[in-house]
Amino acid sequence: MYNINTCELMFAKQEKITRQVASLTKVMTAHVVFDLLAKFGLDWTKVMVNVLTSSTTPMLGGTSAQLLPGEKLCVKELMFAMMLPSGNDAA
Image (cartoon, rainbow, N blue to C red):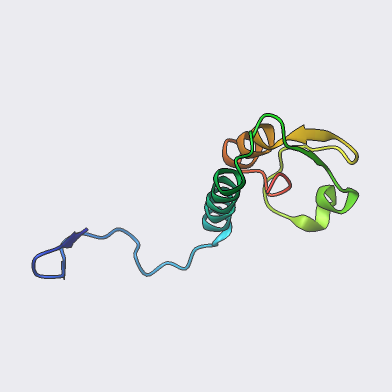
């Protein structure tokens, strides 16, 4: 926690530990998707996405929403799969 008036660090917990950026990447993916939906006036329940075989491979690593190759999901379902179980495959 920083004091905004003095820019002094007042409190921190494990601030020197290096962390993975996967969750930040998923948050940015969500942000970009929402921006595109708004820009083009698209409904996230009607835009459908086909899950690619390569999206479900174990090499992807990290957490998974257990998507199946060939599955067809709307953007809303993919966003929930990406953010709730933190599914890398949904991103």
